[in-house]
Image (cartoon, rainbow, N blue to C red):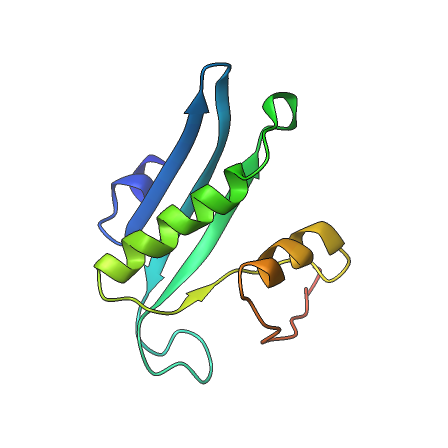
Length: 110
């Protein structure tokens, strides 16, 4: 994890309030052509975590906004976030942020 955080393509933000840790987000810039149909660099959300023991409304939106702003500052204008098909809360969140369905994926087990 340390090498990921030290990589210049990575961006990470932590939300802390007067009650302590509230959440974090980690994303990185993909190389051109990593994902199908994308001819430019793209920001990928790796993790978005909100501490439900210290929940406050809007923290996920603030973290996602900070990541998007940072990627825009770097000239990266596309952001991809992946959510499990049956994770309705995650999907609803990304839709509320302006996300649209893009790819279907498959998990190959050993």
